[in-house]
Amino acid sequence: MSEHLTWTDILIRIFLTVIAASLIGIDRERGGHAAGFRTTVLVGLAACVAMLQANALLIVDGNDQSGFARMDILRFALGVLTGVGFIGGGTVLHRGNLVTGVTTAATIWAMTTIGLCFGGGQLGIGIVGTVVAFFFLSPMKAFDDWLPRRHRAKVELLVDGDLSAEELNRPLGEYRCDVQFASSRLADNGRRILAFDLRWRSRSVTTTEKIYRRMREDFDVVRFSMYEHGT
Image (cartoon, rainbow, N blue to C red; front, side, top):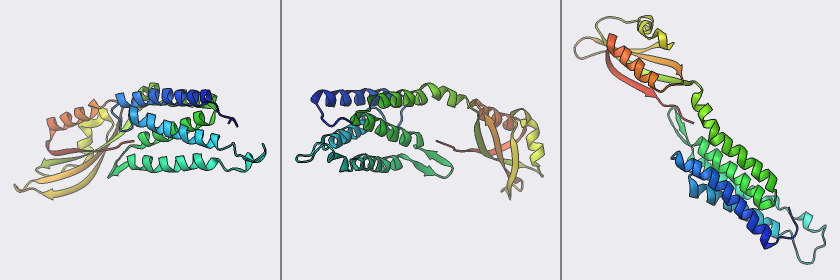
């Protein structure tokens, strides 16, 4: 961090922050995420300006060169990170088995630290941080989508007698489902409604539809519902 700021230093740091935030923000905007282009730029700009202010306060009239080291300028960065923590916490939503907004919160936090780096004059660290953050948010997303996901569903079947989990699992063998009995109750017509929990791993989102159609061929499906999982 330079002791003496010039307008050239200030403009370069703000410019690099806006470029980095725009790169990440546009990628988020294209994906329809909450923290899009403008939000990401504003977060990075706020962090950069806070560090520029801290840098400017290094120069204190009447102090010698060793005097400015006694100032706790890290309080500016910590204050910014604390404030962003509240923003990030507000983007995370937990409802039942569904958790969303974690990546958005992490993006805001990462952009804040990048802005702090640029604002503090650590341009190399800021550039490397931008490249790595963009790499994991954009190109690595394809790899993340390729990884098998855990899926869970609840199915209710209308039967005349009994139906075991093993009998239900036979037509679903190709999907490697883990079938567990959940509950049983009487229907209005005297038949029974049996509920089962299904668990499987798959990369393709079409597997769920295939499982549903396969059960419709062999059983009287009353209800089929997915348990949502998010990140």
